[in-house]
Length: 120
Image (cartoon, rainbow, N blue to C red; front, side):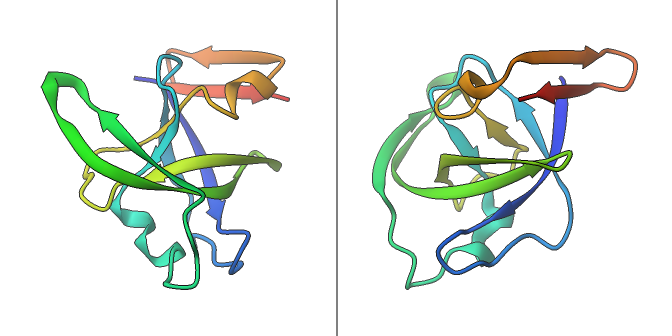
């Protein structure tokens, strides 16, 4: 799998992750999904912009998940995207197609380092 690393910020309360997190870039995903490690970004004052049903592989479906507007900073470039928050997800978070990959000019993949370079 190919990963990108980034810092995530909640623009409504300005909370952000203190460390860099890995994300799987999933070009087939309809939306980005943040795993349970991002719980501290969302407090009771942060209202979701919508809810979405998620269908994972293996027939796993999650109840409607809240979707928040977040800012992800990758290599100094900020992307404001909608992202679903799955409080039960233990896997690596996903960067999906909606509101993210359409903004990119190029994707560079290093198979040796298993990392992806994004150019806006």
